[in-house]
Length: 405
Ligand SMILES: [Zn+2]
Image (cartoon, rainbow, N blue to C red):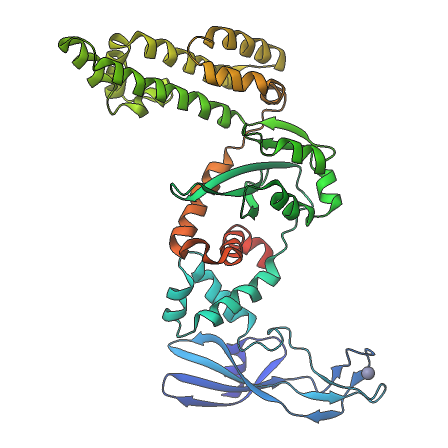
């Protein structure tokens, strides 16, 4: 029986000495097989048992039984340095009331749920769950950034309409989240990135950012070898925004037209944001018909739409950077009367936008990351505890890779 339970328990070097069942709880008295332990002060092996020290820790369930280990963590006295010490147990953190693997089991549930729910489902307190989160985080964080070459910096708002943004740091090549900053302030971002260490920062070759102007000077300051580029998705975004604003403005103007014209223009533009913004070659048959109606009713939107498509093709097809950059210059000239705001912004960031044609870096992974973050936040009641949110987020990208030990 003891042998079977020891096998089932499957903790390295640990044997089950006895077991008691109390209702749905299985209490296993366990200890280490080894008769000796190594003194942490002088590294001498000691067999001189000083005292037995029992305490209870929670472990993974077996079948429908909750498992509590009555663990004997022995104290030894070192004959060489005369100090007493407790033996090392690698499956449990110091002063913790649960095993590492139990903490992992709980934290896995946390990725798609929240602390209170997980606590309740497992008969734990919120504090215990938080403590397990920290325990697991110690094994996963900090993330290994030795292969970071291309960094993406982006921001998202997780609380709609509150104007509160967090900054998302992404390894573009692995497509993984590597850091979160709780505010858009440069100093906060700098603090997080500085913790990565000089070597990591020096190894970064490219940083892809948006055109808000929040990050460029920071990147120049702390990533000495990085080229700053603007991601095509951010450029596309401002063009889409301006096109959509034009659609809304046209709709308003239509109200001043004669009745029959008014209906034609207004109805065609109403509720058709996505038909207009979606890539034309991806439209459904029905959307294509809608688009034709829009073009006919509103010549300005028709021109802006075709400029938007041209812009997209420019980024999709340009074979070499020369062609791309010339194409972009052409486009800017044509677009001035229609996309005043976007043209101004792109001109201001011309070097960084043009950098795309050379390096073809896109931050496309960020969108998926942002969606997942929103999900984690929704499941977890958000930011009452930013550190908690950050750990959960990082774990959900790095859990499997870093915990394979
Ligand atoms: Zn010693």
